[in-house]
Length: 279
Ligand code: PGA
Image (cartoon, rainbow, N blue to C red; front, side):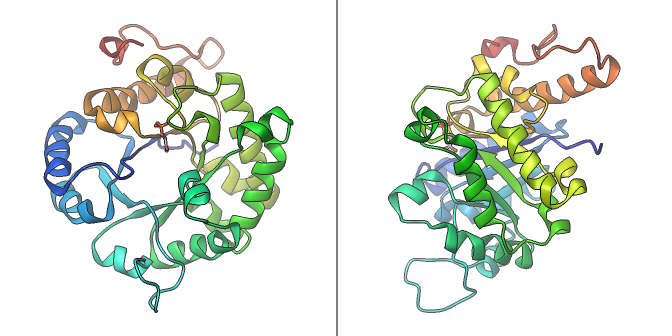
């Protein structure tokens, strides 16, 4: 099985001016000099360039929070994949539940956005997740399957591994309620299985993230789960030190698992790099 590089993405949503974004990145960069994780910052569109300029020569990648599926046209307020690539942006969040719920993002549009991003050389971070009603009605798997089948319909098997999939239960986003490790693992394993039904190699390689009220107290356990390769996190994105500590922690968990696969638990070993953050 390929070793999947941990992936930590900070979705800033509609937070941070250009000046605030610059300050954040200046404080973050020295702290992640040693990380081998993919550390991805998703600033608002206005701050993309400020973050891109600061992160040259570092491990940080920059992602937009949305894009239009067409390359150009009469689409007021939208930006295209090629416009993001021109800014040296490397990735794009697609299908976040806030866009689905508040801005009418449809699976039909996503089915065009994901391949458009890939064709332009952007790494899509595709968000999927169920509502509380769907979970209560035991429809979680059905929702995830419907979303993934629709959104990835036009992505050929070998390209699937280039998509990052974020499992974000809607009821956990910004609510302080986090999925239990069992719920997160079950959903992410189910997602990996869906990818595997299309392409086994892609399933082994695809990065699957958990997002939804990840906090210092639960990040270690969530990021240590077998099928969770990192997180899409709002809150941690505003806490550079904690964010980085969890990237390093994930690397340690991986290393520990490699050393002692049978004995490796899901909790962090001492000395834990996130200990000061409350893990
Ligand atoms: P949260 O947001 O960390 O505030 O739950 C995650 C997200 O919206 O991606």
